[in-house]
Structure formats: C-alpha cells, structure tokens
Length: 468
Image (cartoon, rainbow, N blue to C red; front, top):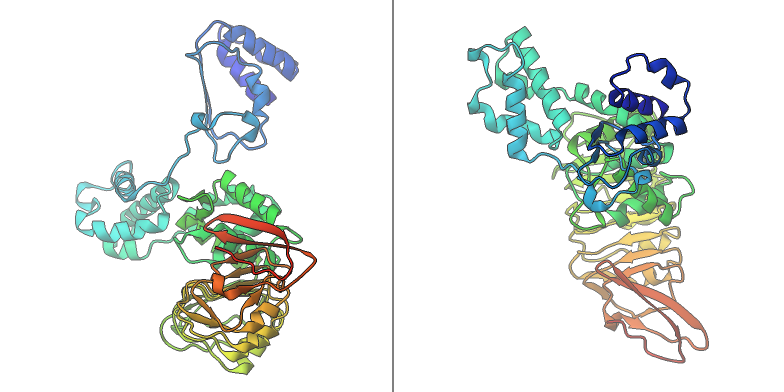
C-alpha cells in the first residue's frame, strides 16, 4: 500500500522531482492526507491495474476526496475485492469471447505483429478447422493470443503447412501462463479446483453434485456442506469458475479444465483411461480415476484398484458385472455413472462396502438390485431420470442416506416417513409411495421442488402424511 500511495503522490505532485526521498520517510496516513490534499477540488481518473486480493483497498478510498461526480477510480483484477465495498452495478465482469470474437482475435494475433509475409498469412480456407481448435481456449483471450503467437513462430521457423500446425497445437505453454493464478489459491480452494478434473469438458456443474463429491471423497478434509458452499464462492471470486444461468450452476473454462487435469495428475494421484487401447492403468497406486468409454466392453482391472477412492465413467458402454471386478475396489467411496447409457446395475455392486456416493442419474435402468441394501455407508443415491425404475424396499432401511434423488420411481411397498432419520434431501416421490404410522413423537422431514426445500415438523397420531 505504501508503494502504491507513493506512486500516486509522485504523479500528482509532478513539479517536485526531488520528493521521492521525502515520501519514503512518511507513513501511510501522512501519504493518504497528502494525496487527498492535492486532489481536493480537481477532476481525476485513477487506474489501478491487476490489483492483488491482499491489497487493503478500503484504506486507499480514504485518501480520495469525495463529492466530485466526474472523478473516477478504475480497478482491474482477476479476483473479487470484498474489501472495496462497491455496488454490484459498479462492477463489470468480463465474459469469455464468443466464437466470432475468438476468431477475430486469433486472426489479428497470427497475421499482425509477427514476421509472416503476405503469402504465408493464415488461409481462410482453414477457418473451420481453426475455430474447432479455438474451442479449447474457451474464449479466454490469453489462450487465444498464445496459440496464435505459437503458430506464427512455428510457421516462420519451420515452414510447415498450416493444417499440420493446427493439428499439433500444444497448450502447455498456455497453461504455464495460467499457473501464477493457480498458485495463489489457498490449500482448500486448490483441492476443490483439482476435483474439476473428474468432470467432462464444457459441462454444467451442479452445486449439489460438487459439494457432495467433496464431502464424500474427503477432497476437503472435515468440511461441512456449508463450508463447501463457501469454497464454491471462493472459486467464483478467484475467477476459476463462472456462475451459470442459474445460481446453483457453474461453468469451467476449457483451458482451466486442462489445468485441473494436469495438476490433479501431479497432486491427487489421478488418471484418465480410455478403452481405445491407447493407454493402460498406472502401475503405481491411483486414488481417482476417470474412465472414458466407447460402446465397446472394457475391462480395466489391476492390483492397484484397491487404492481407488473415486471412479467416474464418461461416454457410454458396458459395465463389468463380475463380482471379482467390483470386490477389487476395497476403498471406493465415489462411483459416478451419470449419463452413461446404463441399462442395468450388476448385483455385485453390493460388494462396495465403503461406498458413500452413487450417482446413476439419466440412464435406462429398470430395476435396482437388492444388493444395494448392503451399502450401509451410502449417503448419496441419485437414480433420478431413469424412467419407471423399480426401487426395492431395502432402500428405506439404508439409515445412512442423506440425499435421495428419485423420479418416476416404482415402489412396491410404501415408504414410512420416519424410516430414513438422516435424510436431508428427497426429491420427486409420489404421494402414493408415502405412509406414516407413528404416534406420540415429533417427526422432521423435508423434500425439494426444483431448488426450493420445503419442510414440516409434525406431531401425529396414526395419520396419513401427504406430500404434494
């Protein structure tokens, strides 16, 4: 702050070139008084570029005289400054460039300001191919300019064809430009950001899903759901994720997604496997794994599976239903099969005794196996958007369940509302599937419609509880 105040005073008091030594001996309060005195009654525009989060900007505001409407303080930063106390309407949040803007910036970067001669300019015939490549930049100007500069340098030095150069674009140099921002994250936000590697590129991240994965997998040790919500806000304030159209949805820039994968491989014992024969499981212990499948059957099993804490399936395909395969995951806490095109869940799923989180949303499952009842530690079960899935009564006896997501479920026996005492979230349960036979005690329960949670505290005697 003292350095900043001295620079401002030097620009205001331009007539005295020998003032530097005097300013160095003044304290911050005296410097603020001096700056305010020289700005009093004048119109001014002060621009502070790339201000760090730690800068106490409120004390700077005390040095600026108030009351002159035409005076302006313009501040740029990649992070939110809560200390500044500005109104929302005074903040302009930068958005990623759209495809047209990205192309214009790329073309300007690659054709101007470099040593390319006219005949070597980027050809418009490859515009579509270039735009496909630019999608990986996610509209981030820093990434687009770095890619354009890299391609221009390769064209000058190597003379390769543009098509070959586009196919060989390396984003490592771009990711290095983002690393200084990453290294400024505190340890808790660092762990949360690394978990973004578990998800598909360019998908909408749901708040509830992120928080439940962090809690179930111990990504943030001993953190409550409330704490995790604050960590999400922290990632937004640091510009690492962006709030979507709904306040409970988030987006991750494509380049930042690449960075999360790179850092997760280094720090989280994370790996990505593809069943196309191009890679195999690591021989060293892994804790987190993403499996990207085609429609072919896969079979990835090693002696190191017993160390896995989480597995995320992307794409579509078939699960190995052999008991020996599932028994190998001795420590598995998180299994995510959302949008996998799954038609049935193997009975051997019940061997995952440490499982805390099971997400089966948006599949084609018709019947859930009875073996789910063996998952005594399961806290999150999501079987929503499986049309007319038959739910065994054993689910109502899984006392550890905290979050249960259903839709279009068929229940052969009605659920007693007092059965799941730890339940916090219950969605889309038909009235016909509820009954209450409990007297003389209070019962607390709630359910969700959309993003609104509705709850009751009832004292009933042989009553029928109706939710609708």
